[in-house]
Length: 365
Image 1 (cartoon, rainbow, N blue to C red):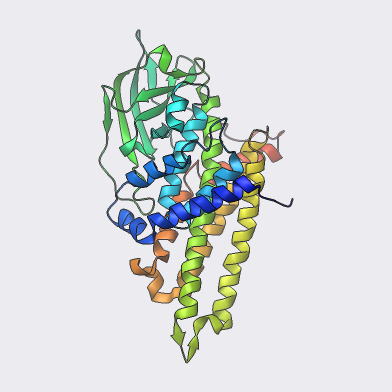
Image 2 (spheres, rainbow, N blue to C red):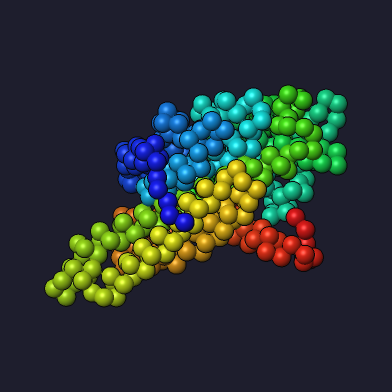
């Protein structure tokens, strides 16, 4: 379907583009190199309303994907931080903490565990006792290093509940920084929970409704990751295009050679297709099939991003592998973004169950 952006959406896109450029490629590269969480850019993003994009009274999902695409063209890690925070906001929509998250108090949505992996809805983290206390361990917590709020999925009785806890609560401990291939500055930490108090007021929704809250948050996070993947490819394409126009070999800019120009246009076509699918998925937010469309967008963007960032590196040759070339950071971050909002395989699991509703698959989530 054709997409016509509203005046407000164009304004959001252009404003975020200026914000991302003010942060700049050099600052993003330095944060990546030293695993430095982008605390000031996140605060500046909050001032622009980018921490409230998933709020019920926010600007909407189209503005969300446009904003994250623009940010990721400069810094995919910062886009991942915003995607994760907005995912937490969507999960907490029915809780009083949502207003604090929308205002810019950073949150980490903690669902994954090392032992359960993709089987995240069967956690080892438990909430039990009188008064209720949480014990367990959560991994891959984007924003965890800077979070003021932790949204923790735990088993409560026979069901799952989601709790909003202060990050400085007694019994909460952050693990050490583990250097990663990509998203190095995203503040990802393992979070240890030891008898952390979880009063009734901390529970998001009713007891046992945590799975539904997480699903809402993951749909936004998945969509945000798809948009960030597009932005990462867009950033790599911009770097490769500039290089090809300026690099002279055999008496002419390499952009004039068909092998190079064909490679650049291949990236552009794939990127345009991914962006169209992301916009279509954004238009479905709030509809019953929103998770399916988000899964489609993320699956396509993920599998587009790896070969297309590789192609951008190929255009730059040896320069593409150097930090100064700029492209290698986009390629590394694209690989890591594949795992934000669940893996590509889990996105395909959502799609196959929608396509084949009468098939009894070997494993049920």
